[in-house]
Each structure stands twice: as structure tokens, then as C-alpha cells.
Image (cartoon, rainbow, N blue to C red; front, side, top):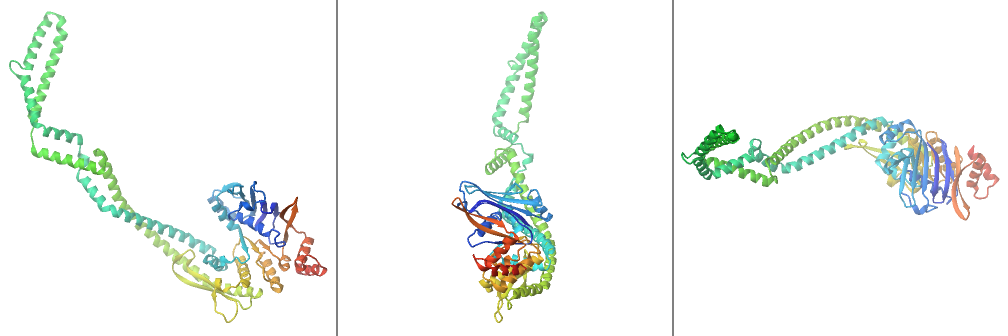
Amino acid sequence: MLSRIFIQNFALIDRLEIDLKNGLQVITGETGAGKSIILGALRLIMGERADVKSFAKSDAKSIVETEFKISKNFRDFFEENDLDFEEQTIIRREILPNGKSRAFINDVPVTLDILKDLSSKLIDIHSQFETSDLFTEQFQFGILDGLAKNKTLLSDYQKHFTNHQIIKREIEQLRSALAENNKESDYKNFLLAELEEAQLDDLDYEEIQNQLNTQENAEQISENLSEVISKLNQEDFGILSSLFDIKNKVAKLSELSSEYQDLSQRLETSYLELKDINTEIENKAESLEIDPSLLQALLTTVNRLNSLFLKHQVNDIDGLLEIRDELSASQNSLESIESQIEEKEKSLKLIEKELDSLSRKLSESRKNFSGNLETQAKEIFAQLGLEKAILKIDLSDSPSFNLFGKNSIQILFQANSGFPLKPIQSAVSGGERSRVMLAIKKIMAENNALPTLILDEIDTGVSGRIAEEMGKLMKEMAQDLQLIVITHLAQVAAKGNENYKVVKFDENGITKTTIVKLSEGEKLNEIAQLISGSKITDAAISQARELIG
């Protein structure tokens, strides 16, 4: 329920605050008094754009604040959007002079999307000739499902349908990724096979390069080793024999004087080291083998590695190993994608089985209650002076699942006998439009948990008995919801549980608008004025009393 409206610096409104009650709340006022301004301010709460040019004070911000009394059914919405739940919830919109906008729910800043989402659940503004909702499948299903009490069933179906759509999108994305990967799969397989054939795990590039250098220079190495061995081992002038002789002579000197002991020891060590070097050189010379087939194998391996380095833009075997592992993972990924698609398709079939069951239940329920809707509409049409009007529900099966099951719906309308039924958007005329919408809103109010409903001059163009019947209808509707009606009809205004008047006045040469709550006496005078015009007559007062009853 909308319990309070506060507006500051919006068009002709300097400051306005009004408390509202439950039931039928009637707002009247002369044409041009500013009723549409109040609605325009409320539309800011609905998330609509604001025009800073309409501000009374261009250098001050505009504020629209509403307070709603809400049920605990909204707690999930607040938790999902990380908001503090309050049974008395305040929604505020601020428009700064530079045109920037800020929105708050219980003083917590929110995006316009969240604001729209919540406000659409709390308030429904229906202006004169605004019947576009009536033409949408969502609205038409809402009427029938409300009457059939399908809320829980439809909610269950839509949860499954949402999962169905999510999984379908995921499968499409996976198939797209699989197709993209398959385009490169053959080339990647070739690269992977090439790297696996190179047996990179067993290779030491530096060692291979050393072996290749040895084989390529084997003859020169052999000659140098032979020459070194010869110089070390010549019988008379070889380095080893000369060093041996020197070592022995210094050893004798050390026996004569301790001064030579250190030199003797050093020469002994050098001789042994040189002798060991000689042995190692001899072994290398003996093991050195010139092998043309080994040389060719080494050349092949090095050339292959260099080619792979160049192809994959890396400098070592570790880089090739990393690329090989990535290619292997990529191929495993393809298998994983195929497996994921298979699993998701299984899940999709299970959901489709459940959707099929739920959609059949929805369809059966709708067919059972469509006749009730047609009967109720006919009764209300007759009450509103459309005695010949017929509303018909055309419910057909749909080949695929949609948000509302496996049905398509179209409301057909016929205003007069002898004319064919047509889709309501093309069959309803301007004079019938408001009454048809009011009838449908009445049916919805009885069967759906509608939010606060604001009807803006929906009764325009009717008078007399029909106006009286519209007033009664609105009074009945207000038993099930808070109904705020903006009207020029005395018959409607008389039915108000609470009455308010929008007035325009001058203050310091500036025109302003505000709204005031009417006392019982003021309500009587206002209704009389609606009947007789600016001059209130005794007859008008008397008639007003009769209307109030």
C-alpha cells in the first residue's frame, strides 16, 4: 500500500506531502490544477527519465519520495539485492540540477533497474487510453492465470523454463567453442604429433650440441691429443720424464736441507696431477671414434630442434615442452567439451520432460477457466453499458516452450452483435477502451495480488448511469487493493473512502500546486461543484448527498 507521497521542487510543486489510506482514494481538481504533475513525479519512482527544465528552481535538486507498507513476501527481493527489508519501505529519487539522478531504497543507493523492478511490483499507473499492456501476451496470460489460480504452477514452470534457456545457451556456446576448436584441430594434432615424435623428454640440447661438435672436429681433436700425449711421454725429452727427474733432484735437496721440503712436496703433487692428466688424455684418445652415422644422427636431431624452435618461437627444449603440453591439454579440452555437451543435453531432456508435464497442467487449467473469464467479463461489460460486448479467449497450442508454457493466447473482442470477433487491439474503439480496461482490472483485482493501482481519468467520456456503475465498480475493486482514482466524475468521487483535491494558487507572484485532504464537508462541496460547476447550488448539494449515500 502507498502510504505517503513527498514531492519537492518538481514543476509547479514547491513542496507537497500527503498521507494515503487503503481502499478507494479519489483525487479531484480542476483541469490544469496539476494532477498530471503529481503523476509525473510518481513516474520518477517508476524509473522514468526526468526533465530538469520542469524544475521550479533550476539551481536546487528535485526530490520525490514514497513510502509503501509491504508484506514479508518481498523479503527475498530485498535479500537478492542486498537491501534492508522494512515493512515501511521508503523509495526516493533525487534529480540534481545538472540532470544526474540518484535512487534510494531505504536510504541505500540502488540502480534504476533495481528501482524499476521493485516499484513495478508496488504500483501500477494506468492513464487514460493507456491500454498497450492489454495487447501483450504477458498481460493476457496474467488475466487468465490469475483467475485460474495458476501462480504457484506458473512460477514452478518458469523456474524450470529459465534453467532450460540457460542450459540451451550453454550448449550453444559449447558447440560454438567446439566448432572453433575443430577448425584448428587437425593442425594442432599435426603440431602435437611432431613434438611427441621428437621425444623431447629424453633430450639434452647442450649435450647433443657437444657431441655434434666432437664428431664434426674428431680428426683435429685426435691429432691434438696424439701430439699432447707424445710431448708428455717422449723417452728422453718428454714432459713427464723431465718432471720426474726434476722431482727426484729436489727431493734429494730436501734431504739435505728442510728449506726444500715444500718445493719437493709441490713438485710431487704436480707430477701426480700431470700424470693423471696424461692418463685421462690417453683414455679420451682411445675412446674417440669417428662415426659418420652418429654424426648424421646428431645433425638430424639438431636440425629438427632448431626448426621446432623457429616454428614455435622459443629458444629451448623447455619452451617446446610447454607448447606440447598446451596442445595436449587443448586436445583433452575438446574431449571435455564433447563430454560437457553430452551431460547438458541429458539435463535438458530431463527439464523438458518436467516442462512438458507442467505446461500440460497449465494448459488444462487455462482451458477450464477461460469460460469463467468470458462470463465475468460479459457481466461487467453489461454493468458498464456494453451489453452486447463479448470477450473470447483464443488459447492455442504452441510448438515449443515459451515463458508461459506451450500455449499462445489472444483475447478476442466484439462490441456489437453481428460483427466478427477480432483481436482486442483492433476491435476495441476509443469509447469502449476505458471501460474494457476497467472491467479487466476488476477481474484481476479479484484474482491477483495487484499492487497499488492508480487510474488516471479512465472514466473520461462516460456519464449518467454508466458513470455511477463505474464508481460502484471501483468501490468494489478497492475492497481487494488500494485504488487511487483521478477523476472529474461526481459519481466516482462520491464513492471515495478518502478524497483529495489538487489546487493551484499564487504565492509571491509564483503559481504553485499542492494537494489537500478533504474533510466530509469539503468532500460534499467538491462533489457538488463537479455536478454544477463553479457555482454550487442547493440542488447540487442535495444530489451530492444522494451520491455519497
